[in-house]
Image: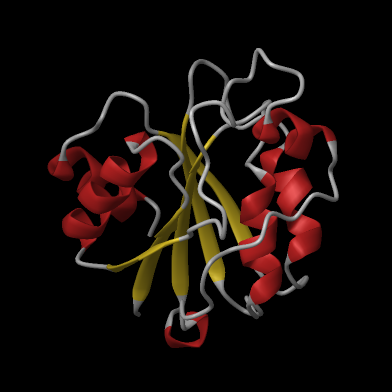
Length: 158
């Protein structure tokens, strides 16, 4: 079974967790990069006109991603990591899921968050994949878990 760690990280926090997870389970890693990188101003959730706020208010928003070479067809299991924005995954995750064929794949979610859980994340991303795709609500990984902790968690998923 070949595993991929795909992640979107706006500020670098999720990236570090993704790198540690890839190391822990000896998986390939892929960064989901927005075509237009997010600035600090874009991420200011207190500003109603900030890019991230505008995107998250529109459930159909699909920020463009930079590349299309994740080679999903080579993997059985894909861990997808992201920061939680407004109680769900950022809509760039939907963009990623809609760009590839995840039929008969197993997706395990992990996230970083300033305080909330997954909220309606699974419900919001399920329409972006086929019915044959298994989506598992994994874990919020806020405390920068060690490689050993991440390995135990991944092994517990079977």
